[in-house]
Length: 118
Length: 118
Image (cartoon, rainbow over all chains, first blue to last red; front, top):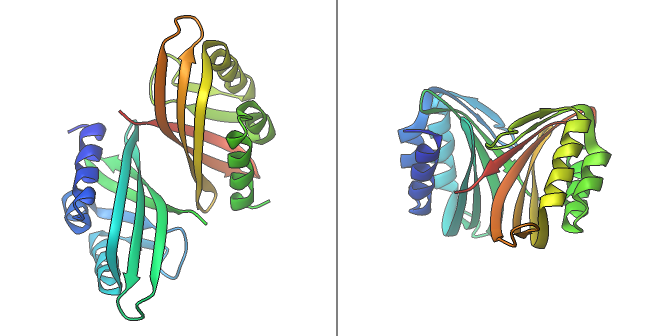
């Protein structure tokens, strides 16, 4: 699969809410995952990426999601995520608009970097 | 100005259709500009970036433009451009949806990389 095909498949999975499956399918074993900020801005390896997803799933409920893209250039692509969430503990509702830049190596995500809008 | 401030200013200029001014204001002298494809996929330096813009302005008329973002992470940011254009020579109308990844160095754009949607 080339970059466009992998990117299309990842977007299709995310549009179905299958974020975990998308990660499991495409993360490299040594994937680097970079958030725009926060306590856990940089994580290394598939286990750490998975743990971040599990924390996220335990903390937020997704009410609505829109996934746009992919936008492709060479071995990299960008996806936009718009989401409305409810914090499972506090009940607080929030909306999120972010983009992710993925870099592939040998058909796997070597790096994912999330960009926040303010 | 930090990344967020530069990104906000660039987006504001582009929303006013001032793409050339945005480049002139923020390109580094040795800016690298990377298209998603085409004959002129990689250009080096402010003169080359300017020439690409002049070619673009001579070829297309912008009918409508939407600029979304910026999305920021560290010294980099992403902007989305949706545009409808008319080819000045052929009259052909087209629509474009792309994102750009900008990397700053010393407050200037060291690299701009455009990502295409298909």
